[in-house]
Length: 479
Image (cartoon, rainbow, N blue to C red; front, side, top):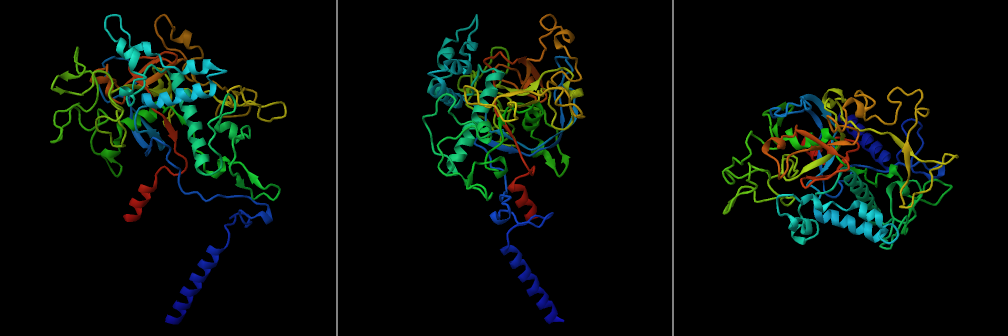
């Protein structure tokens, strides 16, 4: 009996060794992957999405989206509703002046000679600091560029500029990854359309200074460019949706035991007060906001939030996801178009209003068209003819779906409201706001072409594959 058990064990071990020595093969065709002799279909080993610079993983889940404070404005535009948000990545902090200055410098270096309008278009409006009855010229002159404000959140940036920054960041991060992986060389001489663009690279419209392309298992070719299937390039940086921002700000992960939320949050921190209750920091403010009329920072000798205007992006304690200033400091742009009834209309999974479905511009033969003068792949709205037979959507522009096709008529834009397709949501409180607006469920809106001295932004990125990271796997193994 014992001999048969031992023999079986040895046989099983031998089978495991034999299997591990062979190449991976298809479970549906039995053909080997990564074998040039049989056609060379390539499957790369992939474990986990790389965390992009500045990002923190926000593990998704279900939560009650909407007001956690009384509705003092009586707008009824943030009624509570159960939602589910997929896992995603969020910037640890707001985008700071130093980050935006890096962006401006790159635009000036690459486009400044032939396309100076690109640089001018990206400039924040420093005049947002001006007030007819206050002396704020020092902020107009110094806030963006003086080194004393390097780590302070950038303001004066409109929604469109924030999106352009996110697109630029995507390309710079992916370019850095290709350089790190030994595929491209550093090219500081990029100018005009000859600059790295992720879409253009994937569409074989950008060559760059090649150091070493990847080996191609296709027997008809020797080398190839990086593809999306390789898992090397990161998804796009973008503005978070309203649901993502609110979910990340509320951070109920710190108040959850298994699937039970143990205590309700009114702000991004525990409790229903704006002061720290711990012994070490008792009585100190938990965010940068305006405590009351004429009180921006408290009394000399013990400034309550140590900030007359904005504070550095790493200030106060982070919330349970590790995100700083999700309550105060500056309000933040999110991706959504504003509608009062969005909480009732939007899907309960990854809710978002603002979809305008596009496709890459192609020529008559179906090939991707040439890049524009700035080196970017051109996109156009999908047509209803292209979507004929679809059940999930027909029109490209769905900003008005379930809310009227003509918002200028429905909302009487310019007469009784400022709601139209350019109205974008911004979330959270700021250095100019009272505590009410620090509630994650509060929502306001502004025209996407306008900017203020109290609205900034931070970026997000989609999480691909598993909704959890390595930490969860380690915890599960430990249990």
